[in-house]
Length: 121
Image (cartoon, rainbow, N blue to C red; front, side):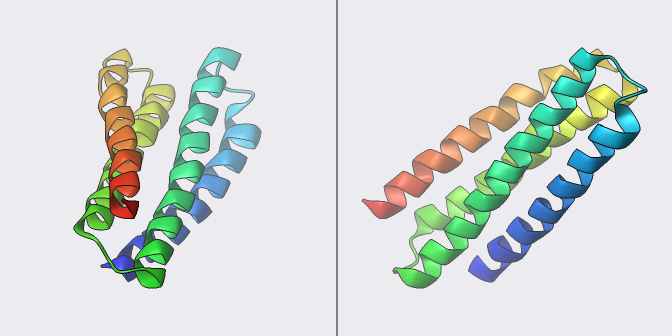
């Protein structure tokens, strides 16, 4: 399972760089600066949590794997999918109701960090 988190961290990291470039080059002239900021927030949180997935995998291989690490990893994945992807879709589609999904992703990310802490205790 930890190799899955490492792989997903690498995938989300690479996609984050690609999406950041897409936002900077393709979206900059097509959307308002406010919407571009929203897109960049999604990219930033995706990249940070891609690193968190890598750290989760490395922690599991360096120390004894705790069930809390598994919870943390899946919560980070859910957080990226709900938080970042909802922001991307909001910017690209203009459908404001997608913003209602974003806080659930943020909560998943926070819960992931808490689970990471619990794995260390």
